[in-house]
Image (cartoon, rainbow, N blue to C red):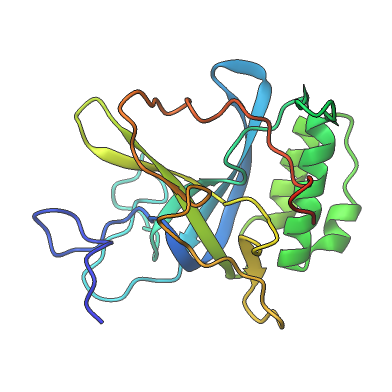
Length: 224
């Protein structure tokens, strides 16, 4: 089937950066990134790569300082684990959200998708930052898993539209990550008309505009 979603304007080649949609990815690494506007808020970022791309394709360099070095075989992307950062907060309902607890819950789910729960349970750390460094060491260079990757459009200074990638929230409709051989699949199917999956550019938006609601991995409408 012919499709243009991964092609750049003026070129027949496939873009080296991944887009939104359902796809198989592997996790090359995980970072725990402090937001630039709140020192107490963090994003879990999955650095992922799709399956190898066939045909006319040139992936990004693995080391930008080595122009003759190896390149990625697939499209790559930085995918936030949640549409919103992890931060201590009190919801309007009065329920208190613990950043560290929510991060731990998120990693429990990811470990079960990757079949690495035993490795996760063996990790001990005094701070959540150190804990996530150890999670990266245990989870990096994973096998391929199924992913529903959502996104939010934003415009850069040159006027180009980019996607800020994230995983849609776990809900009664399904999960955004799942093992490839999972029986009784609950995999979310990407829907560009669903604002939980995709958010069109709003001119007043900035890359951080949708980042103030604290991330949770459980709630009234969903649970792990």
